[in-house]
Image 1 (spheres, helix red, strand yellow):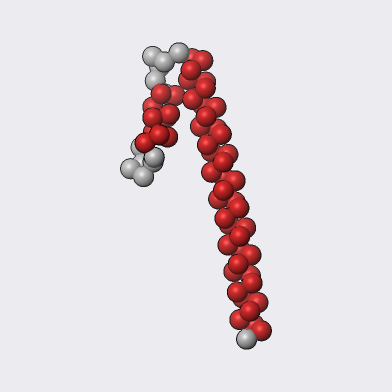
Image 2 (cartoon, rainbow, N blue to C red):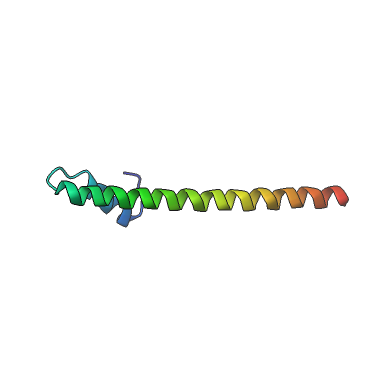
Length: 65
C-alpha cells in the first residue's frame, strides 16, 4: 500500500480483501470504495476544468497585454 494512502481507506481495503470477513460485509466495503473512487474522480475533474479555464483566461489576458 502506498504510504500516502489515508489510513481510513487502507482499513477499508484491508477489510475488503480479508477472506475471513463475511461476504456481505466485504460487499459493503467494496461499495464504499466505489463511492470514494467516484467522488475523487468528480473532484479531480472539477479541479481540472477550473484549472484549464483559469489557464485559458490568463493566456487571453497576456495576449491583450
